[in-house]
Structure formats: structure tokens, C-alpha cells
Image (cartoon, rainbow, N blue to C red; front, side):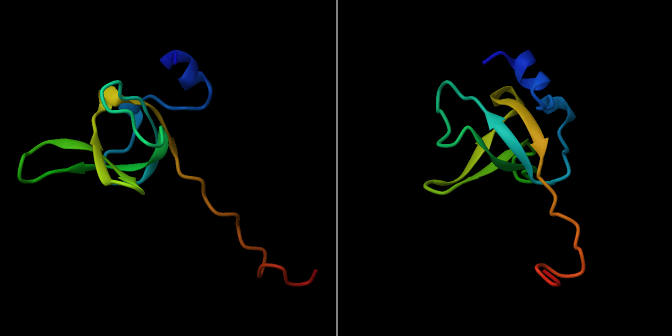
Amino acid sequence: MNRERTIMDNWYPVRLAPRDGTPVILWIEDQEAPPSYPVTVGAWEHDDITGRSHWRVFGARYGTHTYFDRQIVGWRPLPRGLPSRGGWGKGR
């Protein structure tokens, strides 16, 4: 996949992703160990023991995985919920 085209299709470059533990949608490409789901949710975290930082991604089958910026094609913020209109389904 062409990284520039991906960014043009509403994906942000990984260098602009939040590094504060905020969960985001990640597009992952890893030639050596392809992820089960290339588009998934992950969060940036810092390992106090090793002193390294990485993307922590949760997988249904194998638990958590670690990825680095070079494996991330792009990211998007998580969608926000719809604003409340005084109660779901009331008055209809």
C-alpha cells in the first residue's frame, strides 16, 4: 500500500499520533509477522523496565502485541458517540 495515498484517505501519519496512552485506530503492516487484523485499536505505552516505548495492540486470539512506528501505516482517532437528545428513543 502506498503510504502517501493512505494518508490522503483520512489516515494521519504515525509521527502525529498521541503518545499519552490515548487509544487510537491503527493501520499496521508488518512483513515479518502480519497482524491478525491490520486495522485495530492500540495505545502508546512506555515500559519502565526496558525504558522503551511502543504501540500496544490487543488481539482476540493471542492477547497483546507490540509494534513500533515503522510498522504503522497511519492512525485515526476513535469515533465519538452521538450527542444525547434527551434520551434514546423517547418521544417517537
